[in-house]
Picture 1 (cartoon, rainbow, N blue to C red):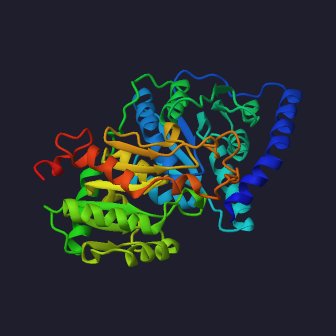
Picture 2: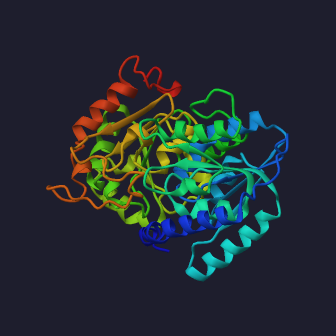
Length: 404
Protein backbone atom coordinates (compact mmCIF):
# COMPACT_ATOMS: atom_id res chain seq x y z
CA UNK A 1 0.00 0.00 0.00
CA UNK A 2 1.08 3.58 -0.67
CA UNK A 3 2.33 5.01 2.64
CA UNK A 4 1.75 8.61 1.63
CA UNK A 5 -1.83 7.77 0.67
CA UNK A 6 -2.34 5.95 3.96
CA UNK A 7 -1.18 9.01 5.87
CA UNK A 8 -3.44 11.29 3.87
CA UNK A 9 -6.43 9.02 4.53
CA UNK A 10 -5.47 8.80 8.21
CA UNK A 11 -5.28 12.60 8.37
CA UNK A 12 -8.53 13.31 6.48
CA UNK A 13 -10.75 10.58 7.95
CA UNK A 14 -9.03 10.06 11.29
CA UNK A 15 -10.04 13.32 12.96
CA UNK A 16 -13.81 13.07 12.32
CA UNK A 17 -13.73 9.40 13.35
CA UNK A 18 -11.91 10.22 16.58
CA UNK A 19 -14.29 13.02 17.45
CA UNK A 20 -17.37 10.97 16.61
CA UNK A 21 -16.13 8.03 18.70
CA UNK A 22 -15.32 10.30 21.62
CA UNK A 23 -18.77 11.91 21.44
CA UNK A 24 -20.46 8.48 21.36
CA UNK A 25 -18.47 7.45 24.45
CA UNK A 26 -19.63 10.48 26.35
CA UNK A 27 -23.25 9.71 25.47
CA UNK A 28 -22.85 6.14 26.73
CA UNK A 29 -20.98 7.17 29.86
CA UNK A 30 -17.63 5.93 31.19
CA UNK A 31 -17.20 2.25 30.28
CA UNK A 32 -13.63 1.76 31.48
CA UNK A 33 -12.64 -1.55 32.95
CA UNK A 34 -12.80 -1.87 36.76
CA UNK A 35 -9.59 -1.10 38.61
CA UNK A 36 -7.32 -4.01 39.50
CA UNK A 37 -4.25 -3.76 41.70
CA UNK A 38 -1.93 -6.02 39.69
CA UNK A 39 -0.99 -5.41 36.07
CA UNK A 40 -1.17 -8.74 34.26
CA UNK A 41 -1.31 -7.85 30.57
CA UNK A 42 0.09 -4.88 28.63
CA UNK A 43 -0.36 -4.20 24.93
CA UNK A 44 2.10 -1.97 23.10
CA UNK A 45 1.15 -0.46 19.73
CA UNK A 46 3.51 0.89 17.09
CA UNK A 47 2.62 0.43 13.46
CA UNK A 48 5.02 2.59 11.47
CA UNK A 49 8.80 2.62 11.52
CA UNK A 50 11.28 -0.13 12.38
CA UNK A 51 13.64 2.57 13.63
CA UNK A 52 10.91 3.81 15.94
CA UNK A 53 10.39 0.29 17.28
CA UNK A 54 14.06 0.09 18.21
CA UNK A 55 13.80 3.47 19.94
CA UNK A 56 11.02 1.96 22.06
CA UNK A 57 13.29 -0.84 23.36
CA UNK A 58 14.55 1.14 26.39
CA UNK A 59 10.93 1.84 27.35
CA UNK A 60 10.06 -1.86 27.04
CA UNK A 61 13.03 -2.62 29.28
CA UNK A 62 11.67 -0.17 31.88
CA UNK A 63 8.16 -1.63 31.64
CA UNK A 64 9.55 -5.13 32.20
CA UNK A 65 11.26 -3.90 35.35
CA UNK A 66 8.11 -2.18 36.60
CA UNK A 67 5.76 -5.09 35.84
CA UNK A 68 7.92 -8.26 35.92
CA UNK A 69 4.93 -10.60 36.06
CA UNK A 70 3.01 -8.96 33.21
CA UNK A 71 2.69 -10.31 29.69
CA UNK A 72 3.83 -7.78 27.07
CA UNK A 73 2.26 -8.09 23.62
CA UNK A 74 3.02 -5.90 20.60
CA UNK A 75 0.62 -4.88 17.83
CA UNK A 76 2.34 -3.75 14.63
CA UNK A 77 2.44 -4.20 10.85
CA UNK A 78 3.45 -7.50 9.26
CA UNK A 79 6.64 -5.95 7.88
CA UNK A 80 7.90 -5.33 11.41
CA UNK A 81 7.52 -8.86 12.74
CA UNK A 82 11.07 -9.87 11.85
CA UNK A 83 12.46 -6.85 13.67
CA UNK A 84 10.60 -7.67 16.86
CA UNK A 85 11.57 -11.33 16.59
CA UNK A 86 15.24 -10.35 16.23
CA UNK A 87 15.00 -8.10 19.28
CA UNK A 88 13.21 -10.80 21.28
CA UNK A 89 11.81 -8.39 23.87
CA UNK A 90 8.04 -9.09 23.90
CA UNK A 91 5.96 -12.17 24.58
CA UNK A 92 3.94 -12.15 21.38
CA UNK A 93 3.53 -10.10 18.21
CA UNK A 94 0.18 -9.51 16.52
CA UNK A 95 0.21 -7.86 13.12
CA UNK A 96 -1.94 -6.04 10.59
CA UNK A 97 -1.26 -6.79 6.92
CA UNK A 98 -0.99 -3.78 4.58
CA UNK A 99 -0.49 -5.84 1.43
CA UNK A 100 -3.81 -4.62 0.03
CA UNK A 101 -7.07 -3.04 1.12
CA UNK A 102 -8.85 -6.38 1.59
CA UNK A 103 -5.98 -7.94 3.53
CA UNK A 104 -5.65 -4.79 5.63
CA UNK A 105 -9.31 -4.74 6.66
CA UNK A 106 -9.56 -8.48 7.35
CA UNK A 107 -6.31 -8.63 9.35
CA UNK A 108 -7.31 -5.53 11.32
CA UNK A 109 -10.63 -7.13 12.26
CA UNK A 110 -8.95 -10.40 13.24
CA UNK A 111 -6.35 -8.62 15.34
CA UNK A 112 -8.91 -6.53 17.21
CA UNK A 113 -11.16 -9.55 17.82
CA UNK A 114 -8.26 -11.58 19.20
CA UNK A 115 -6.88 -8.79 21.37
CA UNK A 116 -10.23 -7.82 22.87
CA UNK A 117 -10.35 -11.28 24.46
CA UNK A 118 -7.08 -10.64 26.32
CA UNK A 119 -8.56 -8.11 28.78
CA UNK A 120 -5.56 -5.83 28.85
CA UNK A 121 -4.86 -3.77 31.94
CA UNK A 122 -2.82 -1.20 30.00
CA UNK A 123 -2.51 -0.28 26.33
CA UNK A 124 0.36 2.03 25.38
CA UNK A 125 0.02 3.60 21.94
CA UNK A 126 3.48 4.73 20.82
CA UNK A 127 2.35 6.36 17.57
CA UNK A 128 3.26 10.04 17.48
CA UNK A 129 0.58 11.24 15.09
CA UNK A 130 -1.41 8.44 13.41
CA UNK A 131 -5.11 8.42 14.34
CA UNK A 132 -5.56 4.80 13.28
CA UNK A 133 -3.65 3.49 16.30
CA UNK A 134 -5.80 5.50 18.72
CA UNK A 135 -8.97 4.09 17.13
CA UNK A 136 -7.61 0.53 17.33
CA UNK A 137 -6.57 0.98 20.97
CA UNK A 138 -10.08 2.19 21.75
CA UNK A 139 -11.62 -0.78 19.92
CA UNK A 140 -9.56 -3.25 21.94
CA UNK A 141 -10.14 -1.49 25.26
CA UNK A 142 -8.24 -1.54 28.54
CA UNK A 143 -8.40 -0.13 32.04
CA UNK A 144 -5.78 2.44 31.00
CA UNK A 145 -5.11 3.58 27.44
CA UNK A 146 -2.02 5.78 27.24
CA UNK A 147 -0.80 7.77 24.26
CA UNK A 148 0.52 11.09 23.04
CA UNK A 149 -1.48 14.28 23.08
CA UNK A 150 0.06 15.72 19.91
CA UNK A 151 -0.95 19.22 18.90
CA UNK A 152 -3.51 19.31 16.09
CA UNK A 153 -3.93 15.51 15.89
CA UNK A 154 -7.01 15.05 18.18
CA UNK A 155 -5.79 11.57 19.16
CA UNK A 156 -5.89 12.09 22.91
CA UNK A 157 -9.69 12.26 23.13
CA UNK A 158 -9.77 8.44 23.20
CA UNK A 159 -7.05 7.97 25.83
CA UNK A 160 -7.69 7.56 29.55
CA UNK A 161 -4.25 9.02 30.21
CA UNK A 162 -2.91 11.33 27.50
CA UNK A 163 0.73 12.39 27.74
CA UNK A 164 1.72 15.73 26.23
CA UNK A 165 4.04 15.21 23.27
CA UNK A 166 7.27 17.21 23.78
CA UNK A 167 8.84 18.24 20.49
CA UNK A 168 12.03 19.45 22.19
CA UNK A 169 13.41 16.08 23.37
CA UNK A 170 14.67 13.00 21.56
CA UNK A 171 11.97 10.49 20.64
CA UNK A 172 13.47 7.85 22.94
CA UNK A 173 12.67 10.18 25.83
CA UNK A 174 9.19 10.92 24.52
CA UNK A 175 8.52 7.18 24.33
CA UNK A 176 9.81 6.80 27.88
CA UNK A 177 7.28 9.40 29.06
CA UNK A 178 4.55 6.98 27.92
CA UNK A 179 6.26 4.11 29.75
CA UNK A 180 6.46 6.25 32.88
CA UNK A 181 2.71 6.91 32.65
CA UNK A 182 2.31 3.10 32.55
CA UNK A 183 4.26 2.71 35.78
CA UNK A 184 7.93 2.61 34.69
CA UNK A 185 10.19 4.04 37.39
CA UNK A 186 13.72 2.97 36.42
CA UNK A 187 15.99 5.50 34.75
CA UNK A 188 15.96 5.56 30.96
CA UNK A 189 18.85 3.34 29.85
CA UNK A 190 20.53 4.69 26.69
CA UNK A 191 21.80 2.92 24.72
CA UNK A 192 19.57 -0.09 25.14
CA UNK A 193 21.27 -2.94 26.97
CA UNK A 194 18.63 -5.66 27.22
CA UNK A 195 19.05 -7.81 24.10
CA UNK A 196 19.27 -11.35 25.43
CA UNK A 197 20.41 -12.62 22.02
CA UNK A 198 23.13 -10.04 21.37
CA UNK A 199 26.03 -12.48 21.50
CA UNK A 200 24.21 -14.84 19.13
CA UNK A 201 23.65 -11.93 16.73
CA UNK A 202 27.33 -10.97 16.87
CA UNK A 203 28.37 -14.54 16.14
CA UNK A 204 26.01 -14.57 13.18
CA UNK A 205 27.42 -11.24 11.99
CA UNK A 206 30.99 -12.49 12.14
CA UNK A 207 29.99 -15.55 10.13
CA UNK A 208 28.41 -13.33 7.47
CA UNK A 209 31.59 -11.30 7.11
CA UNK A 210 33.75 -14.42 7.03
CA UNK A 211 31.58 -15.73 4.20
CA UNK A 212 32.67 -12.71 2.14
CA UNK A 213 36.31 -13.21 3.06
CA UNK A 214 36.46 -10.41 5.64
CA UNK A 215 38.62 -11.46 8.56
CA UNK A 216 38.12 -10.54 12.19
CA UNK A 217 41.01 -8.09 12.28
CA UNK A 218 39.74 -5.95 9.40
CA UNK A 219 37.76 -2.76 9.94
CA UNK A 220 34.24 -2.91 8.53
CA UNK A 221 32.14 0.10 7.58
CA UNK A 222 28.49 -0.55 6.72
CA UNK A 223 27.00 2.02 4.34
CA UNK A 224 23.21 1.97 4.11
CA UNK A 225 22.21 4.11 1.15
CA UNK A 226 18.44 3.86 0.82
CA UNK A 227 15.59 5.15 2.95
CA UNK A 228 12.97 2.63 1.75
CA UNK A 229 9.83 4.33 0.47
CA UNK A 230 9.81 6.80 3.32
CA UNK A 231 10.46 10.32 1.93
CA UNK A 232 13.22 9.78 -0.63
CA UNK A 233 14.51 13.32 -0.07
CA UNK A 234 16.29 11.87 2.99
CA UNK A 235 18.79 10.16 0.68
CA UNK A 236 22.37 11.28 0.12
CA UNK A 237 23.70 10.98 -3.44
CA UNK A 238 25.17 7.54 -4.34
CA UNK A 239 28.29 9.13 -5.83
CA UNK A 240 28.97 10.89 -2.54
CA UNK A 241 28.78 7.61 -0.64
CA UNK A 242 31.33 6.30 -3.15
CA UNK A 243 33.67 9.25 -2.69
CA UNK A 244 33.43 8.95 1.09
CA UNK A 245 34.04 5.19 0.87
CA UNK A 246 37.17 5.76 -1.23
CA UNK A 247 38.53 8.23 1.34
CA UNK A 248 37.91 5.79 4.20
CA UNK A 249 39.48 2.90 2.30
CA UNK A 250 42.51 4.96 1.27
CA UNK A 251 43.16 6.50 4.68
CA UNK A 252 42.11 3.76 7.11
CA UNK A 253 42.17 0.53 5.06
CA UNK A 254 38.56 -0.32 5.84
CA UNK A 255 36.26 -2.74 4.07
CA UNK A 256 32.97 -1.23 2.90
CA UNK A 257 29.75 -3.27 3.01
CA UNK A 258 26.87 -1.65 1.13
CA UNK A 259 23.37 -2.59 2.27
CA UNK A 260 19.82 -1.76 1.27
CA UNK A 261 16.48 -3.27 0.37
CA UNK A 262 16.14 -5.24 -2.86
CA UNK A 263 14.45 -2.28 -4.53
CA UNK A 264 17.42 -0.10 -3.55
CA UNK A 265 20.05 -2.32 -5.16
CA UNK A 266 20.24 0.03 -8.13
CA UNK A 267 21.38 2.80 -5.77
CA UNK A 268 24.11 0.55 -4.41
CA UNK A 269 25.25 -0.45 -7.90
CA UNK A 270 25.32 3.21 -8.87
CA UNK A 271 27.51 4.01 -5.86
CA UNK A 272 29.90 1.11 -6.50
CA UNK A 273 30.25 2.17 -10.14
CA UNK A 274 31.85 5.41 -8.91
CA UNK A 275 34.34 3.66 -6.60
CA UNK A 276 38.09 3.66 -7.28
CA UNK A 277 38.80 0.90 -4.72
CA UNK A 278 36.12 -1.56 -5.76
CA UNK A 279 37.90 -4.66 -4.43
CA UNK A 280 37.44 -3.33 -0.89
CA UNK A 281 33.66 -3.02 -1.28
CA UNK A 282 30.87 -5.59 -1.05
CA UNK A 283 27.26 -5.35 -2.16
CA UNK A 284 24.82 -7.11 0.18
CA UNK A 285 21.76 -5.11 -0.83
CA UNK A 286 18.64 -7.22 -1.13
CA UNK A 287 20.46 -10.32 0.11
CA UNK A 288 19.94 -10.21 3.86
CA UNK A 289 17.05 -11.16 6.09
CA UNK A 290 16.33 -8.63 8.82
CA UNK A 291 18.03 -10.85 11.41
CA UNK A 292 21.16 -11.10 9.23
CA UNK A 293 21.15 -7.36 8.63
CA UNK A 294 20.85 -6.64 12.34
CA UNK A 295 23.61 -9.18 13.02
CA UNK A 296 25.84 -7.31 10.54
CA UNK A 297 25.13 -4.02 12.32
CA UNK A 298 26.17 -5.51 15.68
CA UNK A 299 29.69 -6.32 14.42
CA UNK A 300 30.27 -3.24 12.25
CA UNK A 301 33.09 -0.93 13.30
CA UNK A 302 31.12 1.97 11.86
CA UNK A 303 27.66 2.39 10.31
CA UNK A 304 26.98 5.29 7.94
CA UNK A 305 23.37 5.84 6.96
CA UNK A 306 20.82 8.38 5.92
CA UNK A 307 17.97 9.11 8.33
CA UNK A 308 16.45 5.63 8.49
CA UNK A 309 16.26 2.51 10.67
CA UNK A 310 19.96 1.63 10.37
CA UNK A 311 20.82 4.58 12.63
CA UNK A 312 18.59 3.25 15.40
CA UNK A 313 19.61 -0.39 15.07
CA UNK A 314 23.21 0.71 15.53
CA UNK A 315 22.29 3.01 18.42
CA UNK A 316 20.46 0.19 20.19
CA UNK A 317 23.62 -1.92 20.36
CA UNK A 318 25.93 1.09 20.85
CA UNK A 319 27.70 0.59 17.53
CA UNK A 320 29.53 3.67 16.21
CA UNK A 321 27.10 5.30 13.77
CA UNK A 322 26.91 8.36 11.53
CA UNK A 323 23.47 9.64 10.56
CA UNK A 324 23.01 12.04 7.63
CA UNK A 325 20.07 14.40 8.15
CA UNK A 326 18.21 17.02 6.16
CA UNK A 327 14.37 17.00 6.05
CA UNK A 328 14.18 15.57 9.59
CA UNK A 329 15.93 16.83 12.70
CA UNK A 330 18.55 14.75 14.56
CA UNK A 331 17.54 16.55 17.75
CA UNK A 332 14.52 14.24 17.78
CA UNK A 333 15.57 11.34 15.54
CA UNK A 334 19.36 11.33 15.61
CA UNK A 335 21.70 8.60 16.91
CA UNK A 336 21.14 7.91 20.60
CA UNK A 337 24.03 5.63 21.54
CA UNK A 338 27.20 6.89 23.19
CA UNK A 339 29.10 6.79 19.90
CA UNK A 340 26.72 8.47 17.51
CA UNK A 341 27.38 11.38 15.18
CA UNK A 342 24.70 13.33 13.33
CA UNK A 343 25.65 15.42 10.28
CA UNK A 344 23.03 18.06 9.60
CA UNK A 345 23.04 21.15 7.40
CA UNK A 346 20.06 22.94 8.85
CA UNK A 347 18.23 25.28 6.49
CA UNK A 348 15.73 27.95 7.45
CA UNK A 349 12.96 25.58 6.31
CA UNK A 350 14.32 22.64 8.33
CA UNK A 351 12.86 20.38 9.52
CA UNK A 352 10.12 20.11 6.93
CA UNK A 353 8.75 16.74 8.07
CA UNK A 354 7.46 16.69 11.62
CA UNK A 355 5.06 14.89 13.92
CA UNK A 356 2.71 17.86 13.58
CA UNK A 357 2.29 17.56 9.80
CA UNK A 358 2.21 13.72 9.82
CA UNK A 359 5.52 13.87 7.89
CA UNK A 360 3.63 14.74 4.73
CA UNK A 361 5.25 18.07 3.92
CA UNK A 362 6.57 18.52 0.37
CA UNK A 363 9.99 20.11 -0.10
CA UNK A 364 9.66 23.68 -1.36
CA UNK A 365 13.25 24.86 -1.04
CA UNK A 366 14.31 27.30 -3.75
CA UNK A 367 17.26 25.06 -4.69
CA UNK A 368 14.97 22.10 -5.36
CA UNK A 369 14.03 18.89 -3.63
CA UNK A 370 16.71 17.37 -1.45
CA UNK A 371 18.76 20.58 -1.28
CA UNK A 372 19.46 20.06 2.42
CA UNK A 373 20.99 16.63 1.77
CA UNK A 374 23.05 17.93 -1.14
CA UNK A 375 24.43 20.56 1.24
CA UNK A 376 26.29 17.81 3.14
CA UNK A 377 29.65 17.67 1.38
CA UNK A 378 31.95 14.65 1.28
CA UNK A 379 34.84 16.73 2.63
CA UNK A 380 32.84 17.83 5.66
CA UNK A 381 31.50 14.33 6.31
CA UNK A 382 34.96 12.75 6.06
CA UNK A 383 36.54 15.29 8.41
CA UNK A 384 33.82 14.91 11.02
CA UNK A 385 34.09 11.12 10.81
CA UNK A 386 37.88 11.29 11.08
CA UNK A 387 37.69 13.46 14.18
CA UNK A 388 34.95 11.40 15.84
CA UNK A 389 36.19 7.89 15.11
CA UNK A 390 39.74 7.77 13.74
CA UNK A 391 41.77 10.63 15.26
CA UNK A 392 43.96 9.94 18.31
CA UNK A 393 41.65 9.49 21.31
CA UNK A 394 38.44 10.29 19.43
CA UNK A 395 35.18 10.42 21.44
CA UNK A 396 33.48 7.74 19.38
CA UNK A 397 36.38 5.32 19.00
CA UNK A 398 35.36 1.70 19.40
CA UNK A 399 37.56 -1.05 20.78
CA UNK A 400 38.61 -2.52 17.44
CA UNK A 401 39.85 0.87 16.23
CA UNK A 402 42.38 1.12 19.04
CA UNK A 403 45.92 0.99 17.66
CA UNK A 404 45.00 1.58 14.01
